[in-house]
Length: 286
Image (cartoon, rainbow, N blue to C red; front, side, top):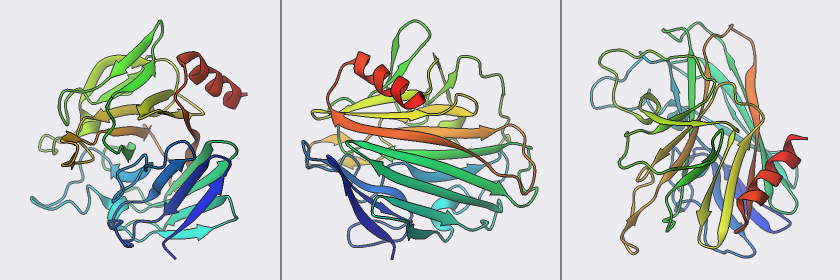
């Protein structure tokens, strides 16, 4: 079984691996769909996914020209879906062919409108040529009127809406000091293009119709936030693009056969104030 449907409180989610099924395209994992009693449309582009494990990278290991199997290794490597309970599922990816990274992602629905997610990974070989591990997740949003991600800076809220794909994409934490290096011939991509913005709290929110989606993390260390105005392709009927609200987890150093990871929470609720966004974060952080 590649996926299953879970309903708790006000939300219903389809959680699945990277297999194709009906209209869902192969290569996209995580939340295939997320709806709310107050909004029946899928938050995510229906053929793809949200919280989709997208890239494993080291700044140097590249595909032959014209290919993207390494660039999209989590999409292409076998992944196993497991239903743990009526509210929880796990995605497991055995050590991959290029980076030999094993990973586990769990999603748990919590009343009334939360999805808690945990990511764990274990490098099984010294395969990362520049000594760091880079991991990347994408959420392809279903043609929202406002494509922006909103971040909390040190003194104010920040609006992050990039002018083009791979332009000013990635926002670092205000105390981030690690500088990733890249091979001279590395393909252009979101994780190597940086915004002048800096975030203070490890969260962002966006607006979809009359809903607010908030994504928050249990740490700032290693977390980077990224945006594309068109990463999810184009919606012909509405004549607009589908933005990508993305994040990264970077490990400057690692040991083989040691587990690393983080926890997060996705909140999906009717449109709320910024004060309520912060209350959600503070409540979860406790």
